Length: 213
Figure 1 (cartoon, helix red, strand yellow):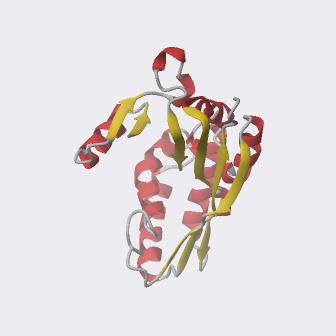
Figure 2 (cartoon, one colour; figure 1 turned 90 degrees about the horizontal axis):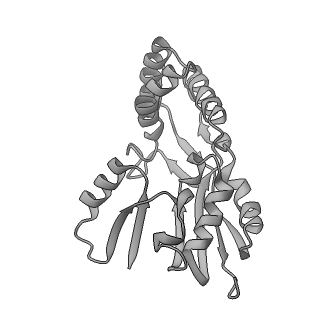
């Protein structure tokens, strides 16, 4: 039995639509930060996992404690996440995109989101009382010529970010409309014509709940 939780109803609707044919997979509206004793999600799972998620939570240490509480004794917590400030492109992307990416990182910092989440996971696992903590490099690398090179979630993911988060950065004062249009055009051309390699720095960290916890 697999349960996916999210506090965003729109995300849940998409998940239900895309995975409705899997009988043992269910979804529930819940926030990992506010699980309480009456939630029935505590001490209930062999594995509690999150991928690319804690980087969007301003209290990741609290999230990991809550993930630990949702797992059974002897169960495992497994988290995959980024070091966004180590994302690497070959050759260097256009100057307009580099300015956009710096604005993106600064916007995240202003929201108290960790741009080096992957590097801090092991320490947070230790602080939460998890044992047998291990970290595994899980870098995501795409190269020109790969079958999915132009996929929105491979080399084109940053074009997707420009299009979806660009307006948010503008509203927050980190970007103006002229710069957003320029970076979208320049980065799209760069992906199509120039980009050879993109590397996302990522780590997978897992730990075990002590049997007596």
